[in-house]
Structures are given as C-alpha cells and as structure tokens.
Image 1 (cartoon, rainbow, N blue to C red):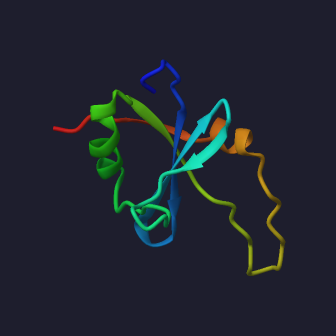
Image 2 (cartoon, helix red, strand yellow):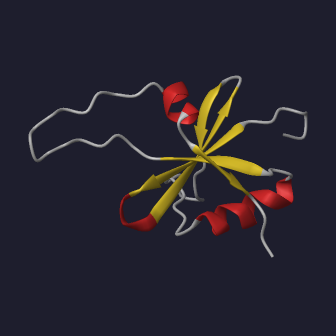
Length: 96
C-alpha cells in the first residue's frame, strides 16, 4: 500500500459472528493472518476498521460464503471470487 497499490479489502462474514479479511491485489488474494499463521478472526467490522483505517484503508466489501440448501440436498456451486465481490456490500472504515 505504501507503493500506491490499493488492494480490494474483502471482509467475509462466517458462522457465529466472525469475520475474516482478504486482500485482493494484482498478484492474487492474501488472507490476513495472526502471529501463529492462522486466519485472523474478528468479532465485528469495527475491529477490522480499527486495524486498517490507520493504514489509509477507507472501505471494504462485506461478503458471505456459499450457502447450501441442506434441507433438500442441493449442492453448493463454487462462486467466482469476482462474482462474490461484485455482490458484496460496501462498508466504510470510520472509527470514533
């Protein structure tokens, strides 16, 4: 980001109120990890904002994983990452 490369920040909502963060950039997709190299989980988008806003990141896209209808046995079709981002919800990073 210091070199002017501004990634698309994806905030993926997962089960039980947790969020994961991915950065979509020219070289692919990177996941935000903790010091033990596990995906870093957040309990709300405000925590993502507090971490990234000081770095100059102003917004992200909130997305959801695939959903399978297990009640009638329909398999989930993998979604294209660009399609997932296209249907995400823009969230602003503003913490007070």
